Image 1 (cartoon, rainbow, N blue to C red):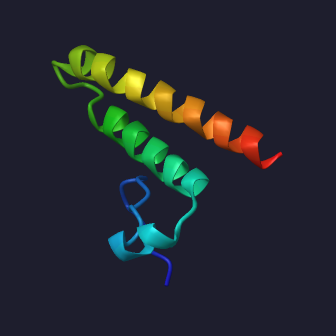
Image 2: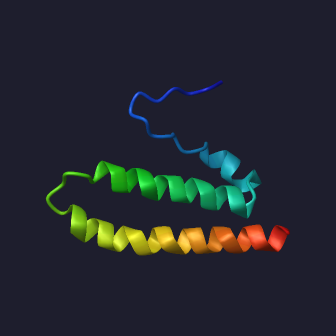
Image 3: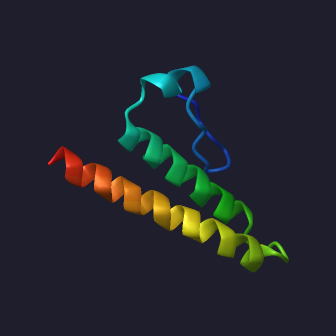
Length: 73
């Protein structure tokens, strides 16, 4: 069953299915969640403060995702 989102945000996977996912898929989903949070914060008076804490997490996920891709080659 496909879930349609009216907000443009992608719903997270069922928690039970997380156990069966590989690391790369988990990193991709984590990256999507961080990006969704950053988008939700747009226009918030504390956007800069919160984004400054989320961006290092985003970059670390991207770094680890790149390492996963290199390991598979």
